[in-house]
Image (cartoon, rainbow, N blue to C red):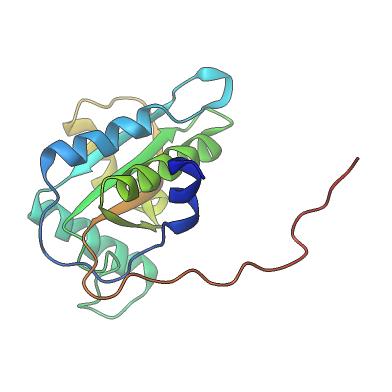
Length: 175
């Protein structure tokens, strides 16, 4: 079996991370993989924010926790020390699909490089706030973007999750 297919079958979401930071060189390779995701009409209308600054990471986690309605102190990023936030231009009809493909590339690349990941939602709500819009402006992003997802990155703290049995009757052949 090819390495790509094996990675697709073996990658799992991790929900407990060690505090150890992923090396910048590896984060850059993961982010680069996101640039090669397919996109509607080849628009490449997605951007990524690579977040390793602990103060900013913790601010985003707090906002995400509040949006999700969890109790104070809950970390919706499960302790992951790094994240890549995927956003897509609001005026692009395929933005959610394009951003989802970027997220898939990020998680598969991370797995290939020995880094664990988890897709965390609520980026849309975060970047609809004034804080989110101001963060983008501070980075020189002037157009309107919609948050698609956060790719939480780090190293699993504990056993790696096992795959659930695949459900039957999910493929229908039309010949």
